Image (cartoon, rainbow, N blue to C red; front, side, top):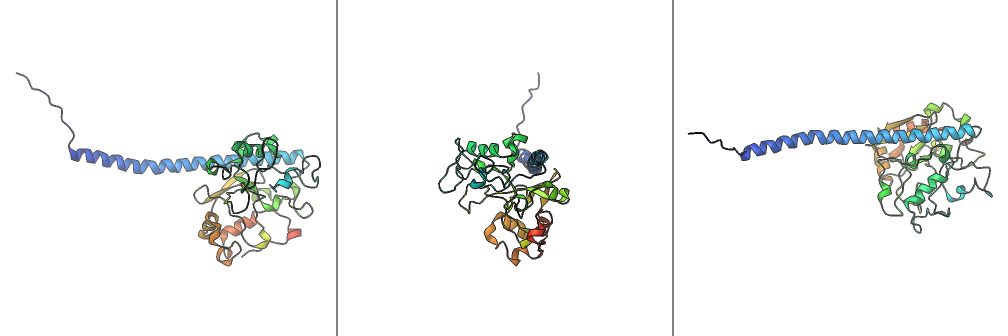
Length: 288
């Protein structure tokens, strides 16, 4: 005579306990994975900003301290070509252009491909010092996956104070930037297609002497933005004022020059202090 072993199945309660344990573990692990992903994306963006600044400084070194232009407009594309205006420095990146170098940056009439956008990067004056379209893009910026003309790729811009709008009035030499470690050059910018363009048009428009915001910045990193500084380092700024985050997320919520947005805004003051420009021509910073 012998005992037959019988397989014992899980009861319903035991299965529910197992499922509950798995749910608890997922609730713990998934946020940690998301946080790690965001950290890695921020690190990659900071690395790209640093790479752009390395290219910027190499350009400066080879051009007698002259800085590249930041007016990303069709007229400025040709300043570095025969017949262009030699009083303006070559711009660091071009707008999107087709294979024949025709401008395709108009929102309402052009449908640039991603290759047209890459080509704009490749035609800029910094390309020779990096030759990597990856540096021109933040990995958290997903606008490029949209259909044309909203497939914007380039995530970074030079701010107004260093864009050389006017060679007579603006900073044109790196040596004119005081305390480079405290002055940013590149900012992280998104585009909401309010204007008739399909890319980050011109420079990031910010004028400390007017005491207000103009263009918003991108919020790709959990209410933070990255910056490339004139000494070559990069850093991430966590915005402290709720109004700043709201305006950057949707510029229609505030008038950019209103007291409602600007008065006592510590983020505005931080941006003003870090923005290099010619104070002799435009006047002192106007704090609100």
